[in-house]
Image (cartoon, one colour):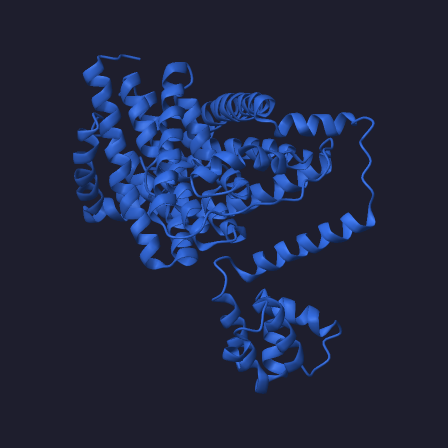
Length: 482
């Protein structure tokens, strides 16, 4: 039957009518609605039709696949465009346009946010106060210092170490809990003292921004720029979410309409979007060196745009189109901010806490078997090539487990006074661009397939050290000392 659909006009409409004719059961809604849901591959409806009408299901699937071959974009996207066209047509016939006599304050503010001339300064103000001041200085500075120094270093670590020394005479076994890389003295300390305050402040800032209705306006503001790198303003949602957790954001790339956009977004999330914990630690590391912070932000932004532009030229596919419903602006509600922050921190903490404990166990086993030393020695070579002390290899090894875990390693090295400012900037840039963490790697493989997921990781591994090498060489050749 699919061949019969050829040369009969609008493939989507004809496919829909044919599916309607094949449906015999009553689903409680119109057969046209069921047909539309089938074409959009709604899992629940597809399962119902498959179980209740097995005799026609195979033919329906053939019709759906045949329709998909006629469009570059997913059918759900094509159907959304048709709905929008139909809505605009009804509105044009039902409404009479009258020039507005005056705009409300909210509407004026909304237009100011979308206009590049005024919207970009507003965006910079939000980034400065929302990310740099609130997350970077308050979360990663004040809160981390207080929890780590006053609670862990003064109280918890000495107390718990004393207990294990008193009751566990075997040093090797004791190091699993309270050694240099122990589950409590390192894993729990990183998770609670470093990561917890940073992600909490980030999710509070994100929830406030989200609740005001600013994100759709940000999507419109940067749509033109994103089109240069093969994306649209719609990609702003996974990109901003990536600042919270790139694993979660990679899953959200499903909302992008084309495979090409999803691959580009996945590459950029894995390469150049630091998660909130990593971002907070880096802001804290570079606190006091504004030039270093600007160089770090400039290099990472340049890599983001360059790799995005390069991907858009290499990957096949048409330029994407974009539309988005813009809700009205409003003041954020405290209850909404609390619920969103709580649920995200709970989800994030449930993910990272076991990973940090697992990383400590793996490192402990690696120390017992000697593998930890071997991997560290191997990583010392690229670390030396980019001009960093050998001990930084341990932080990059941590980065294999989680990038924020690796950033925590840099935090300890900086405290020990082993970095010059130039080295610190090179280390922050390289670690920001470094491999996706285990959770994100698995999500990449799940969403894009194992071949693509592995290819992205291999590319990022070499590219991150290449950029670090390039930056260190520029510092040395130009004689710049930050």
